[in-house]
Image (cartoon, rainbow, N blue to C red; front, side):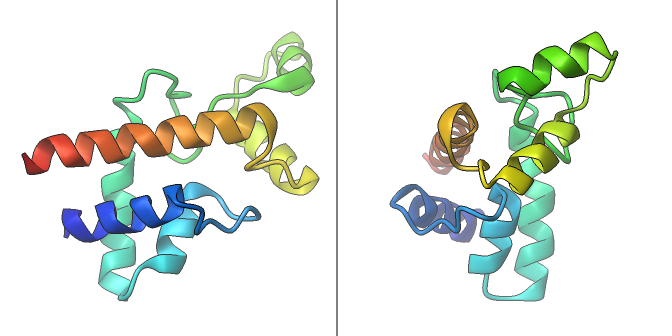
Length: 118
């Protein structure tokens, strides 16, 4: 099963990513079966937690960036979900700093899976 996830993540890294979708939904989109989709989403959260930039949220692992972060912190919001929804609405999930963080997370999970298969 992990080999299937690794293959999907490599496809995404090679460019087979829908820029309007999060990493999880891209994985789900490329998975073959419903059971794979459920398993992969659960498995991804394990790797999110070991990523150096992990936001602290399993649902929204990519941390806040840009000017929204300054505003959010000033309001006492520490919610990566807010950044996700803002980025999605603006069409920025895979653009700018958010793109770089998502690629870094993708590469982190690929490295972890490859290391486990050695």
